[in-house]
Amino acid sequence: MKLTIIARSRDDFGVVFNSEKLHQTKQSIFKVNISDADLHELTNSRVDKEHLIEFAFNFLLEREPIEKIQASFNIKTITQYFPEFPEQVQAWVDENAE
Image (cartoon, rainbow, N blue to C red; front, side, top):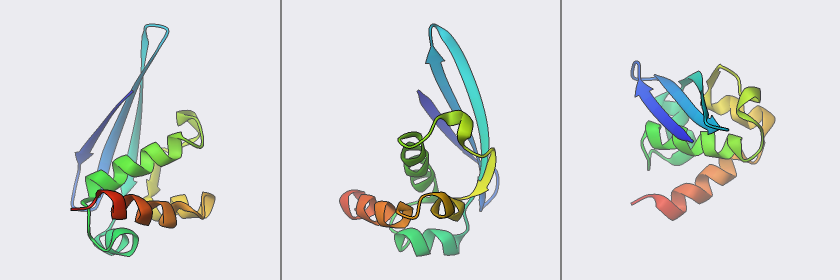
């Protein structure tokens, strides 16, 4: 599994997920929006947007297959489906922020 995050603008990111299964590579492409306000609300701006997106995809992949993840979403949309997301983000930030 390989996750590549590409900044398209200050708030919009492309996410390319490559997975290999039975010697076949599958690529999934996503668009994630995250504003400065979203970043501050979720992390108190203690990590950058790319790291939060990486955490969010790992969080999602622990709970559902890649095919179930929406192709385009705002980072806070995750909370609608997984109410524990903000708490998990905060715990992760507390463990990993410098």
